[in-house]
Amino acid sequence: MRLALMQVGDRTHHLIWAYHHLILDGWSAANLLKTVFSQYFAITRSLESTPSLSSSIPSPHPPIAPPPYAHYLTWLQAQDLAAAQTFWQSYLQGFSEPTPLPMGTPPAAPAAAPTEQQCLLSAEQTAQLRAFGQRHQLTLNTLIQGALGLLLSRYCDRDDVVFGATGAGRPPAIPGAATMVGLFINTLPVRVQVPAAAEVIPWLQQLQRDRASASTYEYSALMDVQTWSELPPGQALFDCLLVMENYPVNAALLARQSDLALADVRFIEWTHFPLTLLVSTGEHLSLTAKYRSDRFPQDAIHRLLTHLESLLMGLTTHNWLRNIPLLTPTEQAQIHHWNQTATDYPSDCPLPALIEAQVDRTPEAIAVRFKDETLTYCDLNARAEQLAHHLQSLGVGPEVPVAVCVDRSLDLVVALFGILKAGGAYLPLDPSYPRDRLAWMLQDAAPPVIITHSPTQDLTATLTDLLTSSPHCINLSELLPHSPTPPTSPLPYSTPSPTTHLPPLHLRLHWPSQRRHQHPSRPSQPSLLDARRLPADRR
Image (cartoon, rainbow, N blue to C red):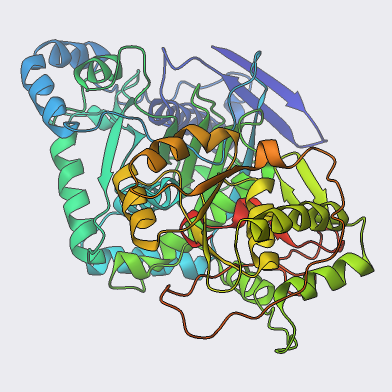
């Protein structure tokens, strides 16, 4: 323990009190702080009332001593660890994979210094939360835990999540436990299951009952609970910790009682967890994220706090969990703005002709981007043209289906564009589908040609072995060199008959003036399609 008093003005000082959690927890520190300054104020009042004794410091009345910490240790040794093990094993049954933090990155070595961000709710929002809790007999802690569980569920797309939470650890069975000084605080897992269709109030009430049951075994050590779980040895139960700060520093202590006035009493703590959320109560509810800057970008933490606020307030205004919005009104308006992409296109012009018109206007502009690879409009058109000539030589034309078994890549866009140029229709075969389903699709549509590339050529070979027919297989990795060779002549466009036995197949393209979700800060360079955004089941 170390104390440092620094004078920063004529009548202003900063007192910095550093201590280790092995000695005190936050609640005990607040108790000790109250005792010290209550004694100080008693001394100053005595001096002011008896100025003749100002040469000596009177002894104040000794404070009422709290129960010794040994009482807690005796109680702790008497607890039933076998019962605790049975409870935690049942509580965590079926949870075999920790909840990830998808907005993070792998940790750096050495770890970067932690940093923090804060979100302060308004007095009206704080009062709304308290009124909602009182109306339904829910604690503020339950509301916070429910909102955090819902946030992690939405972020991870899981209906079963676990995070850590600190508890006061002061057993009510010990008389005077609230006034004891020592280490009581404990960190334990909180499991939140988010059913697809659940009403808000019953769900929160069940969460509160679950936490009440867990508090009976709050004496359990986190290391033991982790051993009792179904996670592999050495695997942490959680990376996110929730801390409710409600230390007993009351208003009477902060009020001016003599020449000395206390102000801005803050408890500064850091944990070893990658992300810690601290909630401080008062007139304004405060949400503070303390995080490792090498794991989480600053803007990601800012969004997390605003999303947590949105979900927290949504609990008080919605009847069903599924209806609570994650995004803030500003984010929803931004997405709506990005999607105002309606554009009129000539109905009498084939799609390949529209693309080629863009080729003529901006041949060297980026048309397709996938990861670190790109194709200009000129290259895309040349490769598609070469493929289209080859397809037509194999008999592809109006109402002729061509199967496409290609991963998301530049090759996928070239294949689709080439089929359209040849006048055919494409049948998308998602390589992630079960083989039996892919084989059935091929057998049903009976395409005379299958387009593949190196990553999927083995799968394609297996599928064709299951067919009674023998379609032509085109490996784009072999057919199209890195530098495409211009075709000898352009292809005429033929419009297929409107009647066909095949279901309609759609190609979703992002045109320069119709790009979906285009952020204003992105380059305005024309772009045909971001292949990463093409849904696998709607190629």
